[in-house]
Picture (cartoon, rainbow, N blue to C red):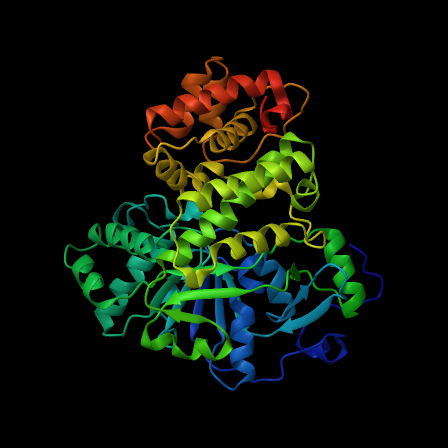
Length: 463
């Protein structure tokens, strides 16, 4: 990163920041929000909403915690919690907003537990990725639990013991019924602490589901240099994002102030969840895997490939054919706008980044649509192709004419071991397990066989 004699963004250099807006509100009050996993997305999404509330004089300071990685703390603590959100759209100048909503950033299970039990904290939010909701470690069998659900259960045990009212817990991760999933995992952990704790949580604690949306790629060194040049200060915690931003959450009384800054409080989140996962996240994954197959590094470059663009558009049409949404959600328009957003070259979202962790993502993004189409007797070939590309990239399967990068995935080791036995049917079964029916698993195996010999031609219709 270029530094020269440039100073770093912090409270005593804030007046030198060349930004559209900087925080001028009081940042000394006890934080009312605790957030677990304060990465790029939380900075460009949750923290921006909080920043806007604080500008209105409403309490919304955030206490950020990371359970394992110290990266966020190392970036943010030297900057007094300040960071820049750079909004980038094609044909428009970059706009810079310095956000001051983060009061502190800490790392480790002990710090997380302290934040979760702080009396002032009334809302706890999480961005721990789909992997963070795997079955949790048992607090009674681990000296220092390292899963968010286990730590939440411990924090609620402490709150119950001292008579402190529990906060609202809201997942901001891309999962269907993310509130229900989080609640289930917390209850599982609570049952190992005290038989009476889980019923108490079930009766007293709310886990509203929510749907969040903003494309926020991990910043590169070049991104940080560009922002520093515009800002006039070094900002190691800066993030870039598109202009679009939305947050839809199940309405509970404590969240009412969020409506003042554009958060939608609704009674039924489910149709919004399906719309996002099936018509944005699913096509995003399909574009990423297709981009890897066609040799493109970024999502924006991939969507300019005519064959891939046709393939993804057809997959979206397949989804719309069976997905039932209320007319008010304008599903077709939403899907078209999502494809337009993918083409934003300023974001630099890489296909490898979007394609990572497919074993956690595809069961939510594609397989429900597959089940719906099969129930109607409709073909699922395009979905099988997407799954086959993911498996090939995660397992290291050789593909004709393409050097697929090996994707990060929790199941990569198991998939690579299965791939060495050179049996596509077995590999497909290992990858999909009980998540998909036998017919679709066999269709994915067939797509894997064709992928090794046809390469990118697999994306073309009427082969």
